[in-house]
Amino acid sequence: MPSAARPPVPGRVPAPPGGHPLRIDPSRLTQRPAPAAMPVVDETSAGGLVVTRRHGLYEAAVIARRNRAGRLEWCLPKGHLEGDETPEQAAVREIAEETGITGRVLRRLGVIDYWFSGDEHRVHKVVHHFLLGAVHGELTVENDPDGEAEDVEWVAVAALPERLAYPNERRLADTARTVLGDDA
Image 1 (cartoon, rainbow, N blue to C red):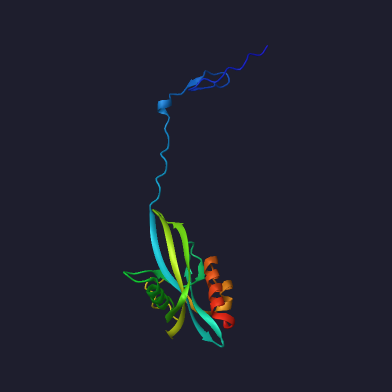
Image 2 (tube, one colour; image 1 turned 180 degrees about the horizontal axis):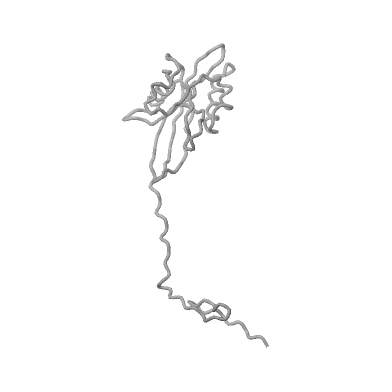
């Protein structure tokens, strides 16, 4: 008649077949410490669409820059606020630096708020976007102090959803198209 199974004994591991039971000293067990929470850094940037009317339609200056994986992506010009700049002032400056076009703020388009992780911290980034009318300048990336913008082009506002890499920026382009009306 087979023997009845014994209930497990705390701190004891069943013996391997043909062996003796092993005792485990609970004080020797090590626990991994819980990972420390990464510190959070808040960043604020501003940028947007600077538009001009060419050939009867509105076009916007967009830039190409490398993403973290090294791929070239078309996006809206933007950058960090400096000193005591307002988001509007930073948008005008950043757009001029990255595209060569000086603009005048026409209206706020929206705010994009997102998170990403760096090597040592998490970043909570808020980017204020504006619609600007081009006042003067020529397309160039030569004045970008960070050298992030690799190329710049005028793109029809209606074609921006197909050109821009990021869904949130495509939504802002749709908002600009609505604001600009039938000529967008």
